Length: 125
Image (cartoon, rainbow, N blue to C red; front, side, top):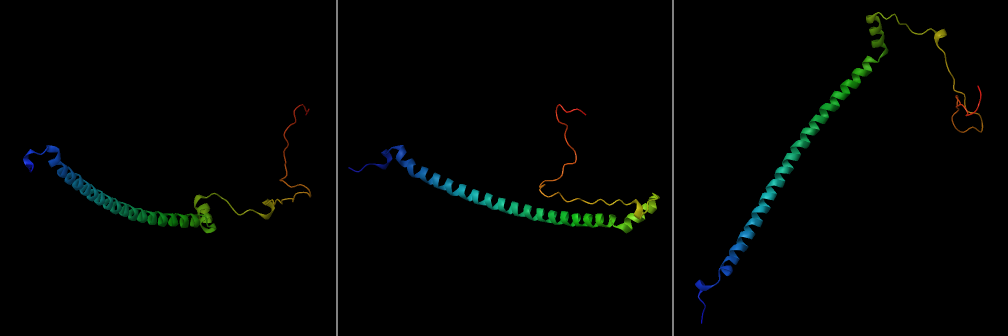
């Protein structure tokens, strides 16, 4: 005798429905993940572009400041500032210049010379 479909258990009829729901949720989840990932890529791309523009501005500003420092350190500018501030500074006379020479280390002495010596314990001064 053939079984009547109306008399089958409820679990059997809900089996295909559960499979369809799981498959649809998997597809929808994948689609949402794909859109989210593309959105993140686009957002990060825009941030990289903004950061590159900011880096160019900082480099340009840095170059301007380096040029300004070089100008302010130039002898012409220093002389002008001395005259503006009435400091009364002048180039050093040859007799005012003391030149120091570095003595090469003695043969057999490898390291740098020691000019000061630490006091020895128990030594009298």
